[in-house]
Every structure is written in C-alpha cells, then in structure tokens.
Amino acid sequence: MSKYLAAIVATAVSLASSILLTASRPRAFGLRLPRSVLAAVAAGAFAVAANECAGKPVMFLRWSYVRFLFGLRHMGANWQVGDGREQALADYVCAHARRNDIDDVIRAIDEFCYTKSYLINIGDEKGRILDRAVLAARPRRLLELGTYCGYSALRIARVMPADAVLYSIEFNPANAAVARRIWDHAGIGERVIVIVGTLGDDGKTLTALRDKHEFTSGSLDFAFLDHVKQEYLPDLHRILNQDWLHPGSVVVADNVKYPGAPEYRAFMHHHEGAGWHTREHRTHAEYQKVLKDLVLESIYGG
Ligand SMILES: C[S@@+](CC[C@H](N)C(=O)[O-])C[C@H]1O[C@@H](n2cnc3c(N)ncnc32)[C@H](O)[C@@H]1O
Image (cartoon, rainbow, N blue to C red; front, side, top):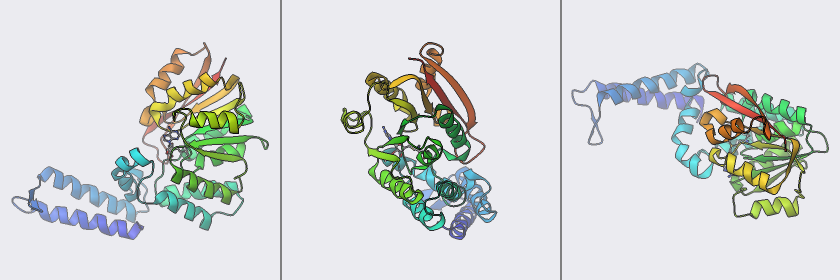
C-alpha cells in the first residue's frame, strides 16, 4: 500500500474509533465494543498515520509491519506474508538495481525493506556478521537452509571465494522463484543453486545433495541456518549424520534469540569445547534497533 493510502486508511480508522468512543454505548455491526479496545485502536491508528506521514521512522508503526503482523498465520503456513510483497521485491530490484551489480542489488533490497515493505531477510546489521564469518572461513562448499528472497545468499556470494558454490534449500517454490529472479539480475545465478525441499523430507533433499550435488564426507565447509527455528537442531543432526562437516567447518545460525532457537543454543552451550566452539554475536532483529537478537557462529571440532 502506498504511503498516502496507508496514512488515509489509518486516519479513517482512528477517526471512526474516536467517533464511536463518543457514544454512550459504542456499537458497530451489532456488536458492543469495549471502550478500552476502541481507545487503543484510535491511538494505534493515529500513531500509524503520523508515522507514515513522517517518513516511517518507527518500524513497528509502519503499515507494512502492521500488515506483516496480520499475515503471521499465512506466514506460518506458506512463508510469504500474503500481500505479494516478495514478488514486489523482485520487481523493485529489477527496476531499481543495476544489472550484474551485486552491491547495488543488496542496496536495493535493503532500501525496499526500509522504505516499502518489511521482509524477514537477515538484514544489513546481522548481514555484516554473516559476511565476516564467510570471509574468515573462506569456504568452497556452502549450504544455506532458508532461501526466502535470496538476500542472505547474495551477501554470502559477494564474499565467498570465486570458485565456491552455495547450495540453498527452500521450502516454498514461490520463494525459490523470487530468489532465482533476483540472483539472475545480480549475475550470480551460476554460483548459487536453490533446491526446493527440506532436510526433513524423508531423505529426498539429502539424497539430491549427495547424489546430484556431490555432498560427500567432510565436504561441507560452511552452513547457514535461517529457516524454521524448531528445525535448527534436528537439521544440524541430519547434517552431522551425513558426516558432511569436517574439523574447522563453520555453522552460523540466525534468530537464536528472536524468534528464538533455545534448543539449538542449549546444544551449543552443552558442547562448548567438546566438539564445538561457539561465539555468540549480540545484535538486533532485522531492519530495526529495538528487538534484540543473537547470531551464533560455531566452529566444528570433529
Ligand atoms: C527467515 S526466511 C530466510 C531468510 C533468508 N535466509 C535471508 O536472510 O534472506 C526463512 C525461509 O525458510 C524457509 N523454510 C521454512 N522451513 C524450511 C525448511 N524446513 N527447510 C528449508 N527452508 C525452510 C521459508 O520458506 C522461508 O523462505
């Protein structure tokens, strides 16, 4: 929704709630409305309208974030917000970023997230932690769980060695298509391969990685976990069971504090110095500075 439309809708909601508040027994559509709820809606909608008019300085008051919260149920099932913003991102990148310029594509995605629609990419702040981890590890074969629109893969591809290949696993084919379109625009379509599936899909994806993409014992240098949080630990065990890691392999996990992957964090604490060495990076959730988050960078000891 455009800035003006969002501001007009929010103002209308705020005014309607305020008018209802003046009635002795507020009712709408045959339902009695508690005054406290009406007052909260009026104040919230007013704050959203003012925030939109002021250029969206507060993330939580942006219409795109409020719409994202309304889409959480859809997100939980499909991993898309439900208003077409993922496809809109690909259109935006193709229209506003220079072709074959990976820096400019990353810039355009961050710009879209700050000024148009909020997306659940790793974002610029945590993205720099990921950049540094890849640079330090100098990996040749990388695995990402959770492609979404391909933003973190772009960041990884920008800093990984020229002969490295990133395999990115994505549950939703529509997200994979968005990512492919953006990667092709950035000119990295050859070095990043998206595979639709999950490591828990009864061996289908694990077999494809082994048989088609030559994942062999000790061949995986770097893994980035950024998918469904409850699957971080089970998928790490699936990777370990395949024996793909070698001493010195690095596993980076996003969102360990928010929304949170407590079992994964507990596992890394428990194995500190005994199979794993982990560094916890304190940071913030994507595209804002209020919600705190943790990114874990773990080195496998074998
Ligand atoms: C937080 S987003 C990933 C963001 C992306 N890494 C980035 O920073 O640009 C999570 C993605 O994981 C995908 N996903 C969910 N469950 C999955 C699973 N079990 N395996 C692989 N991908 C999964 C979702 O469809 C969604 O696109």
